[in-house]
Amino acid sequence: ALAQNGGREVRWTPLLKALVTTRLNLSMTTLRPEAYSPTIASDQAQLALNEIKPFATSKGKVMIGEMLDISRDEEPEETYNEAKELQAKAFFRLGNAQRASSDYGAAVKSYENSIKSTRDIKGSNAKPEAVVQRRLLEAKKENAKKRMRQRKKFKFAFSNEDGGKELAKDDAKDEDGKQQERQIGHPDRTIDADDEETYE
Image (tube, rainbow, N blue to C red; front, side, top):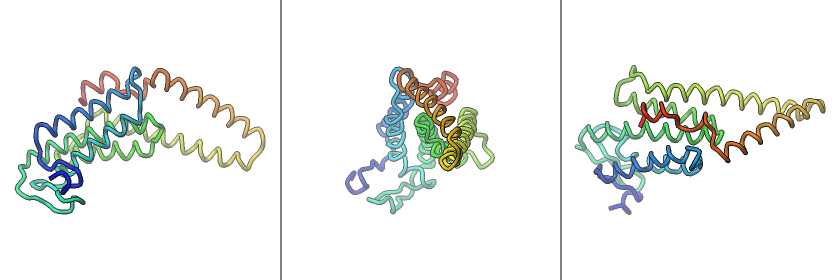
């Protein structure tokens, strides 16, 4: 059955839910200082999203087939709702991992997808989790700063020597900060205690 469905499980079982939850917990844990690895965190979130995909497309259906292009009907609505809740968390975890890797544009998209998944089950006016909204705003600010910095680099590449020296100093400072992050983790980019309590 797995081979016929692109290697995916297409029955919503307690075992599958446990697997997805384990992946989400691994994604969260590997952004803590003692186990800091944004790559592993991102991989686990992506794997969780892959496991959830057949169940989170539309209510009452499960997508099957190698390309997930065939629908199996008469699936309980509860399956869709549970899958969407886990999908929202998986996108949130993915966004955290992308933000930790300084991929702010991708993080913005992931946080927006998390909010969309929540609204798919709770309605378009549903208020997303506060922590997701906060992380989305932070990622948007960081993305704007990064883009501004790239524009400055481009400008100074064709400008005077002093501008280049200024950028070199900023680059050295950025590299020192990244080195420190790799050694101890970045407190602003790890899941803090209030996040864990509000969005497990």
